[in-house]
Amino acid sequence: MKISFWSIGKAHEPYVKAGIEDFSKRINNYFKQDWEIIAPLKNAAKMSIDDIKKMKEN
Image (tube, rainbow, N blue to C red; front, side, top):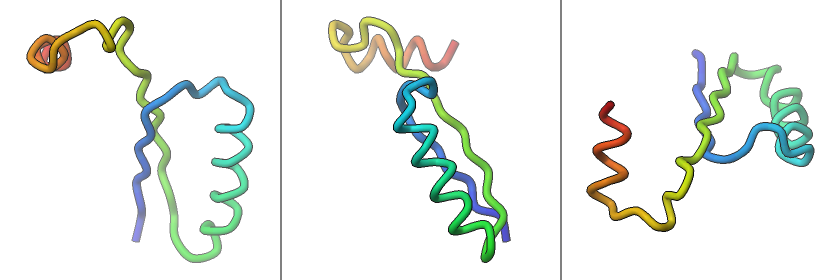
């Protein structure tokens, strides 16, 4: 079985990379895993939910 992990945030932050590496080492003995880090939209705090959905569809 393969587990897919999705995370929203910045991949270049050192504590995120260290956390993913540590968790991957622990779970790798039991399951294969796949990580995908999704970058947040710029200016999302100023946008409405409908505008965000429209951007994601494109």
